[in-house]
Length: 67
Ligand code: SF4
Ligand code: SF4
Image 1 (cartoon, protein in one colour):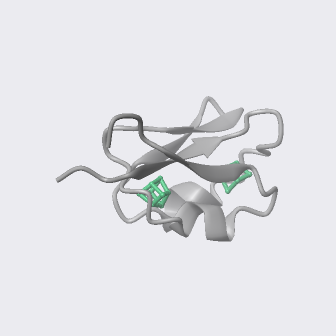
Image 2 (cartoon, rainbow, N blue to C red):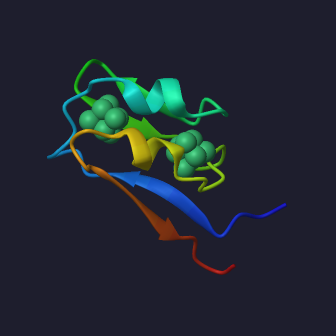
C-alpha cells in the first residue's frame, strides 16, 4: 500500500531530542549520530505522530511524488 505523505526533518531546527523516535510506531525516524533526526522514507506512513511531539517544530509532512 502506498502512503501519500512522509515526514521530512528540517535539520537546521532539529535539536536531536529523540521524541520523534519514541513516538513513531514504525521505527521510521531515528536520531542520526546525535545531531539530527532522519526519516526512513520507505517505512514512513505519514501519520504525523512525530510532528505532533517535536518541540522544535522541525518536522513537516510532504506529499510523495507520483501518488
Ligand atoms: S509520520 Fe508517522 S510513520 Fe512517519 S516518521 Fe513520523 S511517526 Fe513515523
Ligand atoms: S522530535 Fe524534533 S527536535 Fe526532537 S529529534 Fe525529532 S525532529 Fe529533532
